[in-house]
Image (cartoon, rainbow over the protein chains, first blue to last red):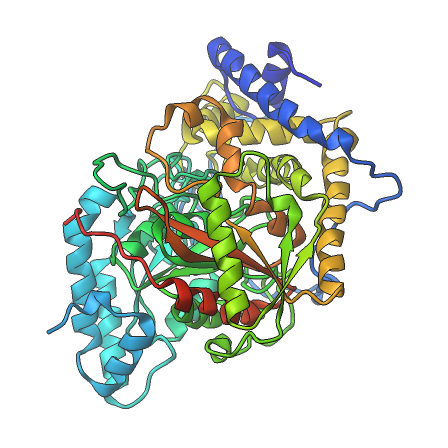
Length: 95
Length: 494
């Protein structure tokens, strides 16, 4: 399978990364290089093989569904580019 | 006084207890080395001199009272991927501009609880994506090694290039690193240092900036096998904050060093003798086999038939997980924000400006393979291949193999700015051909220096262990270290 420049632009949009026409063109070639490389997997017969979901043989740990942490909004918002009263500030989303 | 920075951790530990010198003397000696050498090597992206001296002073107070932890007063460097409270933590990316966490990673917390001293944050490939440290926002770290008669600057490997360079050049006694596809072992091999990626679940991932969560593991880079064992003992723990942390007590790895390998079964996988394997690498591998044979180990030929599919499967799984993990960098909660006409454009502008080209490439590959209609063909298929890769190893271990000996890199360190590698991302990915298989299976692997090539550059060998078989790796790697000796670059940087 290979991708064209329109697919790369669509994927970039999904990934929320701005690409220029020139950038998308360069990326198309590189992505096709990578997709061509992974195509080797088509040689492998995976009939009846379960996908690997965990490399460790341990049941996923569960904890009690309770509050164990929190109450430090200053810490949570400290590294944000823009905040007000412990809220993250973003451009207007709802008209 | 002898040069304190030339000591191993084990030697310094004893000397500090004997009060031959103080932790402050030791830390000061390393800060001096950093000041003199970091300009040329670019190993550190942030030096925390005041904090280091403060921590050393506290260590001296504890040592004076006859107290102190397993790493009391030992100065270490920390890869920029580990969250360190109030200190530069950017995964060497522009997108995390100015980020100073309000919390400390479990691995570094463990080190400080044992008395270690933090010298600063180490250079790396951006978000640990790379094999040469050239994708760092802060520019490449430089390998302390140079080829005989050449002045060309070489890469220290990646992604933990700063960690490996700093250890090899004696800008720290040891360093934390992480390994998703080879990022501890390849830089260790390129710099003549020892690096171990432990079993998945051995070191907590809590507070480590995520790249590919099902593969990421922290581990140390050190001067020798014993120091690596000492560091891993402290870094590893059972941690409730990481649900993949495994409930197995951390053993005393150091106790394995010096134990005979007589009767141990060492597997030699046929599939690692890849087409075009350089004669020097093949010869080194044979020497390694002989060293273990001479020490009494039993050498057995094994087959890991799905080896060649590990790398292509990795380049689906890792970008897929990365595209999801890196979705959080949106210009809202931390780091860089580049304004746009609306919120979506702000996201797009921030991420375009903040991520370097290799990171963008992997996010796009990951987004594509996970997108509607392609998930089964790529991601699901890769995860099935992963099951087969893991099964290969299980069969070898089931047949009684204790550890597997392989090459770790297809070459010695290459030049910074290598045009062929820069032009073709897939060529750079092939650096990981020997290292990536065990990440896919969650197994531990150690890289140990085994010789120099014809250019006078270090080469390493890799030992792959059973799940939680780190002690066997230290035991076996130590035999190779004893036989091959240790390798130190000539200091040109200070």
